[in-house]
Image (cartoon, rainbow, N blue to C red):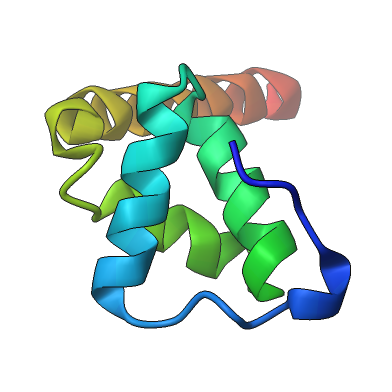
Length: 87
């Protein structure tokens, strides 16, 4: 995995460079979360942007449906928790 040099923020640019970086991260065993965190470090992007890029990447497309289901479950669980707190 590439070393994070904080003096080189925003050096990663362009869709193909980002995809290449994500491929390298995944092939070295990094998770989606680690990929998001790494993109935040090397680009200076906020979490929502890095998450969006990873989620929509070709590299992680096989996990997209699973992640969407996971987020839906979190939302449902949160709604149930809020309803029970209000009762």
